[in-house]
Length: 470
Image (cartoon, rainbow, N blue to C red; front, side, top):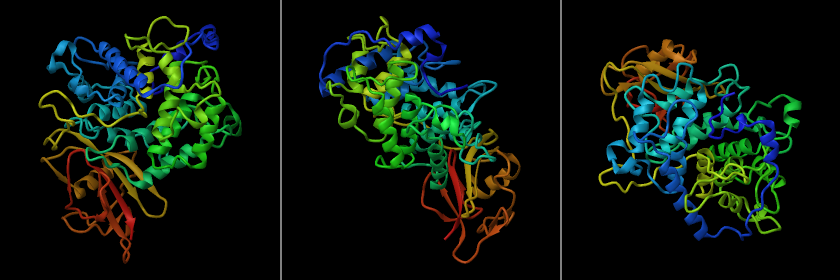
């Protein structure tokens, strides 16, 4: 099982997990005030800065601290401003971008959650995830895991969290201009699968439940309920939607009156509470009022702040712990700061540092990928990553569609294009021809759909959507 998360909780023994159910005494406190939250953010950022290594990195092989970028951005700190000993040449953003551009990253056997995690954190760090380098397009990497046999799932459907984090990454990591870069048809497909996996109790788990009455009847996981809620909301689902309302009710049912914590599958802990609060934050639901203010006057944010060591700023994983955990500190800070599972990059304070860095053009002769969807207007959505080698600083839609006939992952995204050459209007795609006002149209990076022509200029990192219709 691969999960795009920080907590090492699955490595805990049964004895430790059972011990987590026994809370140590928490200090009496009212609902967290804006001043307390501000102090928590300041101290939390200080602790996360201390996690940076001497070479400027947060991420490495295996489970690492790269989720710090989402927490730092949520707390208002730009990754480019985080440096070891003030050495700006080793700022966290530049070092992370270099890592993501490395040919051997993430491993010899990558999984979709590797690219989803990187997309969410690159975006928070101010790295356009579709334009990391001349060869790295994280959005296209995710598209390559679309399941043709089970449309709407990314990666093996049994590992449902890969689909949840696809929704979080593809809708949450917007363009530099703040637009959702993927088409509505893809967002709708993801939402359909997430809804189908909601358990009877209103929550979700990391594994697939769709079509399995036993799995749907099983108790849900606090963590994945927060993530799935966020995935729905960033995909355009309103927080008044029935499925969100049911998820809220599930979380409320797990509240511990005396502390404001959620009693999670692995006991009361910071990571699970952080994920749940981030889910509420992403849906615009205040975790300190209404359903989440207990009769003892406590909230999940109160619990998280009570887990923080001050002035050191780190958060402990269990209430009984005596030292901070890096993963718990990331989850805790992001949630207290009001963040979902990513955040737009803050404006840097480093002189001359831009908010965004991105590959501006193709590099001739350097192999790369682009993300492509083809919507036939009749419910047939194809999604793929198109591999090609550009011959100039830009390319054309015709060249990408031609490349997709043989170089798409998964295959079958494009079978035929008419005309097969030139720069004119595309009159048929995959055997479906234009008919009256119903024609093939194209959008890039979430722009309005317009007539599709072979000669349309495609730039580095463009997310391409084709749609047949009026």
